[in-house]
Amino acid sequence: MSTAKQNMLSERDGEHFFELFSPLLAYADLDTPFILDDTMELRRRSNLIWRDVSLIDTYIAEMDRKRPEKPIPEEDREIMRSWKRFRSGVFYVVSNQPDGTLFVDKSRAVYRILGLQTPLEEIFPKTPIIVETTLLPWKDVLITDGIYSPVAIANPGKVKPTLDRMCRNAIERGTVVTSF
Image 1: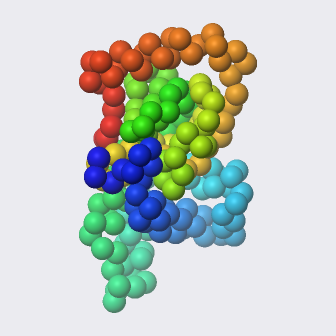
Image 2: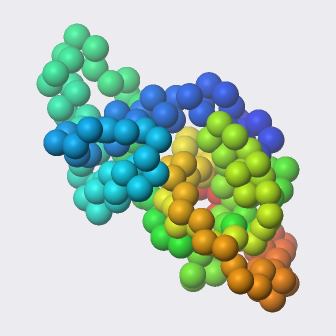
């Protein structure tokens, strides 16, 4: 994992993600002021992108048209276009590991996710928890879009053994999803 430092992206990659993603969020709805600290507004804008990923190509083309002297670098284009392979939905955040946090989706797939600029164990110190978020590829690892809508589990002790077993089995079988 060349881009990873413990349970998160390198500092530069974390900054780079937001340099790419924040303008895309702003572009998703140019008619509404973009307020970075409004989680509901961020979720609404990200949902616009994930409902119509052609917005990514439209954004790239628009930036090229507006700034022909400073085109988006090819590496950045590839990163943004890779986001079309996103997975959005509700996930269990099961276990914080040194090399990533394990998320489980409704199909029981297990994903190893890295934090963007903060280790996920600081964001989710107590697991399991349920979150709505979007998983994205970042170079050779998986991240989220950084927008989380958490839902507490009424009785986490009841589901934890099952989730832990699913994660342990995925690790043993080598089926933990680490990129897409």
